[in-house]
Every structure is written in C-alpha cells, then in structure tokens.
Length: 345
Image (spheres, one colour):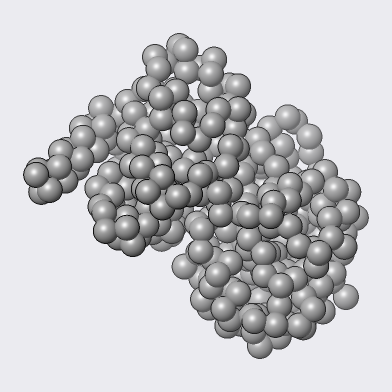
C-alpha cells in the first residue's frame, strides 16, 4: 500500500510525487481522470533548470480519482488549488486514519487552517513550495526556478524526512511557518503581474515598469504586515523588506542582482499565467486577495492588490487574453493608489 499520497495531481503534485517516486518512495496520486490516463500511458518525465532529468515508468504509477486511495497513506500531501481546499478537507475527513499526517503544499496562507478544522484527529502541517513548475507536455513536469521545500516542524513528520532526502528534495523545517508563508506570498504577488503581462517570468522581471508594479504591491503588503506584527522570513539573498527597493533599480543592475536573488528558467511562467492560458480560474483571491483580507482585518485598504485581483478576474472572463505592457500596467497601479488616497483625504 502507498506510504505517501499526493492529493492533487497537477503540476506541483506530479513533480513532487514524481521526484519521490524516482527516489524510491512508495507514492500514489489522486487527481483528474485525464491526468491519470496520461500518467498511466506515459509515466512521469521530470526535468530541472540545472539540466537534471528523471523518468518514472508507467507501470510504477498508482493514480486514482477516488479519495479512498488515501486510506492506506501515512502521509498525504495536498497540492490542489486553494479554491478546492474545503472540498478536499471534507473528502479526507471521511477516509483518513487518525495517525495520517497531512501537509498543505499550496499557495496562500490559510489552507492548512481549513484542513485542520476538518481533520481534528490528524496532524496537519503548513508547507511551502518555493519553486515554479511548468508542464511542457503530457506527463512532463519541469522545475523552472530555485528553492527548497519548507514545512512546519513536527515529531509526526520525522519518519518521512528521509523520503524527501532520498529524492534530493530536503525539507527545511520551521517552528513557525507564518513568516515563511507570508514571505512566499510576497514573492507570489508577481504571479498576477506575470499573468497580465503574458510573458515568461525572466522576460517580465527584466523590465523595470513591471518590477515597479510588483514593488508597489509588495510595499502595500509589507506595510500591512508591519501593522499586524508579522515579520516575513528571508527566502532569497535579499531580505523581504529590501526587495521593493531592489526592484526599482535600472534594468542592467537588476539583471545582476536578480541572478543572485533567484534562479529562473527562461521558459518559466507563473502558475497564474498558465491558468489564464488554459482558461482556468486563477488563485489570485488566495494571493493578492489575501493582502486585501489582511487590510480589512486591520481596518485598512489595499488598493494596489485589490486592483490586481480585479484585472486578473477581468482577464479570466475575457474572450481574448490581454497582454498588458509594463507602462500601461504601472499607470493602472498608480491610478489605483491615487484614487485610494483621494477617497481617504
């Protein structure tokens, strides 16, 4: 029976699960029938921006559409989109053993709380996936940026740590994941900008106008976090509070600084950009929208991130996907900020 179950066979779930399989772990997947058919016929092909490659043969793939698959698992990694978390929590509540450990490897900051509320008998841990994964073809998954998995420390998780080490996916463990999740969310504020730009991440971040949009979104979030007494963790070579300043430097200088901060494959795009390309609903409400909810709790506003949410939702509904220029998007962000100032003057 499977020791580890990936609940959500999307890009992140198939990449992490595939790496664990390649490392020798016993892994099963729960996902859509379409993905299951692909994996059973093609196996899983994995690649890394540093040119490493792995392949897991089709006969080693255990994939199902049924939640009952997790009944035998000692560890469940939840990798579904945030909107699906309440549904998954209810499904897991019906089939999990009480000693099964559940890890949320999802975007946003509140998914583990949703799972924990539905699974009071289980150990539920916050996790964070820092890197980008794209799907270049059916059954193929490519890690396009750097970073290591991070997770809340728990005695219940220690028996699985070696499984990740064997897969060369070491777990960085933390007593408190809140600063880590918010630090990741600060970086993910670029997902909306990248989706609206409709360019590869490396190309988008090479242009100062887009970076200034990201800097504005991050400054807004950082001010709210300071008010909430949350100090985001340092996930890159530059502390989170310094990043907006670095984003504003000229393009030539940022090219050097950015390379030191984060390695990004030239073909990588944000998951939000991939969602728009595929006609799927995005996770913008669990990323930029999370900043807006924090602002509401503090009796404040977050006009930059709220406007980014609106623009992404407009793009979701559009017949033709928009491709915002950096200058046009920056003007939109400045207008949103100015309108907010005028309302509160």
